Length: 339
Image 1 (cartoon, helix red, strand yellow):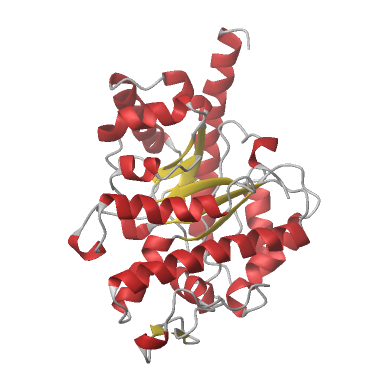
Image 2 (spheres, rainbow, N blue to C red):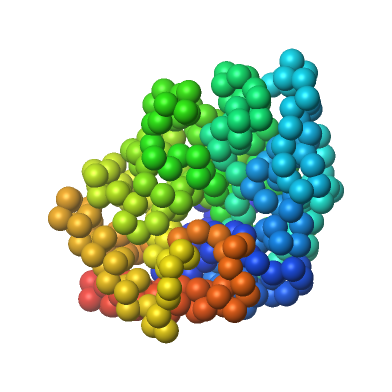
């Protein structure tokens, strides 16, 4: 077991969000290790295995929930879905976890951290509602399933890559848009659901939450992550006070600064301007400019499963160049203050 207090994150490092377009596991794992050696993220490969997509991977093993080979969910009899029922496949031997298993085997022996990511409870709960469960049961099932699966994943890491520090991030695209009517949750309900997942692995990894669009970041921060993963420009300026307090307490931000939804140039100039502009806005609202840079990671905005391998390579290259700019700024700050 590796307590989160035992390591710190690499300054200004590039990392990724998770999914890749590759259809070869060895190539995908080599890709993240070569391109982001400071903090490689365990990839998922939906093009190779549809069950490695976010929702089927998260729903795998829930009693009463059928996961088809193509990743679609169905609930033949909602009355058979019980939040107290044990989650299946605790050893993560099934098809949805094949790339996770191989990644952990390959990184065994590292002393630097790795990043693991799995679907968060709110997003899974929303998908179970869409499949036919009532909201109360869906969120209870999702909360229990995600907490158990997170512990299962860290147990697998203990077994296959003992001693390797871990960052564990819960992916919550269902939070985009903040408190919406279709969530069927209050603000306190969102906080409770997220905080329960984070608390399940407290002390065993540095924990985070990723959301790929604008949301109420104050709610996310109240749940207690140690890392916040968000796109640049995702309306975080309105939560500058909460973000500033988060940074002062040692929190990290993984800035999704490289666009994954539009054309990209050959240099990260536009991404750098947008990230710098975001930081300027936050500083104007009271955030510490040094902490913003010193406790920053750089990522693509989202996963890259819908791209091709050439595009993914270009996105990773731009992410590294941008991270190097951040790192240079951090080192300049440290030298200027004699650190």
